[in-house]
Length: 403
Ligand SMILES: Nc1ncnc2c1ncn2[C@@H]1O[C@H](COP(=O)(O)OP(=O)(O)OP(=O)(O)O)[C@@H](O)[C@H]1O
Ligand SMILES: [Mg+2]
Image (cartoon, rainbow, N blue to C red):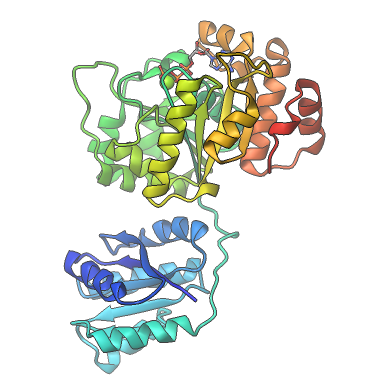
């Protein structure tokens, strides 16, 4: 049995103490830390539980007891089966009772004592737990990450958001490629407001304000990205992204991110961490595959799991020549099955020239449109067997459907 903790505390020292105490225990680790205990805590917890249903939560109530209790109560309301350990300096009857009434399964008095902490971990270990977040109504974050420039990351992100919007999903498309800024270009949009204004207005962000100032694509999704001018990187930080994404997953069903090629940018990394699925976009060209290999090992080192990352081969061709690796070569180099292959199709280029997503004009796009839609089906877990089967059969991509 192993111990996996999510730790919420405004106090860096408390979080550090938990980490230190776990060092002496086998198979015990902190999976995520939340530096603020507030009423949005449940959103972050839910997002992390989707990936780690075995985790338990430690909540430090000492910064602001009332707020902490309310935050904990909201978490328990969202996930009643979650094992929660409350912690506070004061441990009088009233405080402990209040914790129990708000769903705590255990209580730890501060300052933390090694023996008491170990006992609490033993109690946790002996309690069977695995929460289900299937009832969660939080939006999903899908991030497209390019293993190399020009592999089609923006094209796939834009069309993905477009298909979801056509399916009447409440969708937001975020451009985190600070240098290219091509999402707006591919959509023929000239946004007046950018991530900078989002950052400035986070404190009073609500759906009306957000939709009032970001761009709405004619297909119905919302779009926001960096400033067009290259002079300014734009002030938008990682904590801002965390707050923004909390707002987004609560209000929208799908959030699609174009992360460009950035893995070591703070904001892009935070987006990857918050993602339900990361699509690593490659082509069959050797430099792209080599980079994909580097990206995968970096992401694994950063604690991402293999099932979070799906390899998508763009411009897929069965042709196997000195410039293009075969599907088998791609898969064996990356040590991972490819999730999907998107064919090399003139319809994508034509769409970029028209500055509208390829999937907008289904007739003109033909086969490429059908394959792309079955990719979205598979990625979002929608079963449309007939469509998928038809697309796979025609394009000969059967071997790529790996799941
Ligand atoms: N499957 C495809 N078939 C044909 N052309 C494609 C395909 N995917 C993308 N393209 C074309 O390739 C070009 C580059 O695509 P895109 O800008 O989406 O790549 P990117 O990886 O986002 O590039 P950058 O690194 O500049 O951000 C575009 O002209 C696009 O139309
Ligand atoms: Mg791009």
